[in-house]
Image 1 (spheres, rainbow, N blue to C red):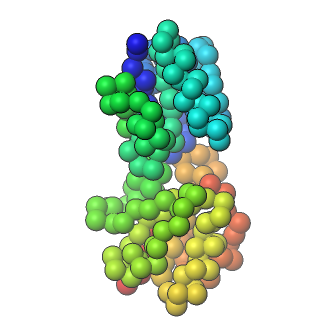
Image 2: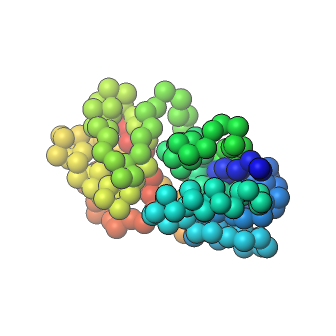
Length: 206
């Protein structure tokens, strides 16, 4: 059986997809991913399969079709940072997988604000709770992936409640797309500029 290729496609725009990722997509018979990620590869001529919330169904589809076809799975950002790779490894052994990295949205934002990110706690609030307030107090800087429940304005409100109203938030919205916005300010200012679309956040507190 062919290996399953797991591909990170970066922050969103096709310009940030690595050349090796394009080659892997072109070599596949079936391309699996979320709708937004599949839209990057509009010239793809093979079969496509949209990932749903029912991940067991997706796994069964992969197990059935990999017997005769080469499958590639495209994931947002980097494959090693809060991605579906963790779930895939529960169903397939390492020998079944080939992994191609991508540029994470937080990595992209740090580059855009001309800051380094080594040593900075990076967390995902996507469907989970993280104590980023305590991390911020300890490390003075954190990077956060957000979701619909933990939007930048909600994070700003939490900072104010924690008496960290002088922290500086940098919100990266729609990163790498034409409508990209990078907004910097104290929590109150960030709340005033809401609502936000697809975003990641860097917070500093001195």
